Length: 270
Length: 270
View (cartoon, each protein chain N blue to C red):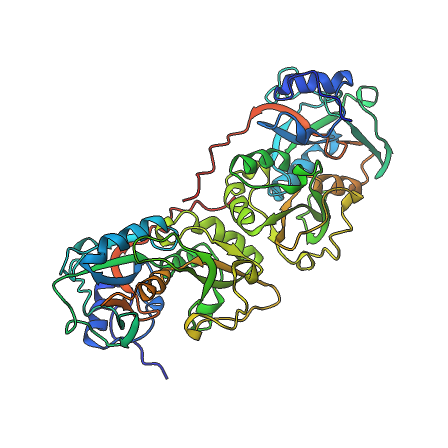
């Protein structure tokens, strides 16, 4: 039985406090659904400009919502009390391209030369899609969207490069049409899809073989797979770059910001 | 060998004059591509309000661009010199639900109690789609889009009802995504698609079996069928209503208006 959270799940500040205290350890797609969430990517300052260039070259996958000053774990424009060392539900720590730890906080490994990037995440547009009447079966089933490495190469910058990673949602045709029309108005959350239909056309051999193995990977007979560029592209690039140190959020535990999602930006369809 | 037209194919007025004189007998999707084209539906005045109500109940298929006064073959808002009896490349004349003639002009059967409706047509958004970089293979191949009767019922009004008719375009995924995003901004040209993917989900058993038998009906391995509501829905409804007299355009020979198509309404995608 899941305990009922005893904090305001709609308040980003309350959600962050619950995460910080350890009271909340769930996926963040279930909370603060009207506020922007983001991918976390922390790299040494020596690599920060290359990473920023990589994001700029691949804006569909890597829309930058904020960047910290060297050594600072704070990005005040995203949340006044936001501490990127403690306020994400889980972290992955990579050294030399190897995953070495998945801690709940990274204050102990933080360094004075680290720069944090927060990148747009599809969790934010999922709320918008639902607001516009799109059924997201993976959410109805308490799951997250599946991710896949594609055969599409990103545009490289410095040591950063590698395949585009996408997230997939199984949608009925009418919902796919609506989701495409809505999501294109949100470039900071990956914009319109990069593909729909036959996965093999973008180098995905088997939907059952998702990135990390998790997420909703099955299609009903009346559903199409719809693929959006995914911020996890940054993780793949950072692994490939074999940085001495790199910290990211742990899958589906995102940075919860105070930025409200503008639900009304997508005009209702005729 | 096709003769090169000796009139300004970009000018609606010149196109209409060429049609009126018999100099042009081709499909109108090849001419006046930056101006709005429409379906023609002419019914006796006694049925005009029912038909208008039918259009209002099914706006995706039947967006009304103009309506004439009883007995008048003119709709000046659509073209100062437009004469609906002579300026469409071909007509179909129905009596009691039966096709009795396909003349090049209908001046001889015009009556003082006829009311003409011009309804939005997908030919108009095809120009917009191409403007936004969408490849339309049926146009590249000198063809028109195929149409299909679906299993989707329209909302009836008076004697008018029956199945929704759709047009289909075979699009690559990236073009389908772009086409969806663009077309939803043009409700007067049928707006966003009603379906994409598996045709059987909307009651189309076989893509080879198109309405009237014509149009591009084949799919390449990397293409999806994308379906838009179609103004031919009005013809099916008029046949079913068994009106004493009903006149429509002949397939793919549309009413060419002076209204410019606003290419810029759809914002470019990120």
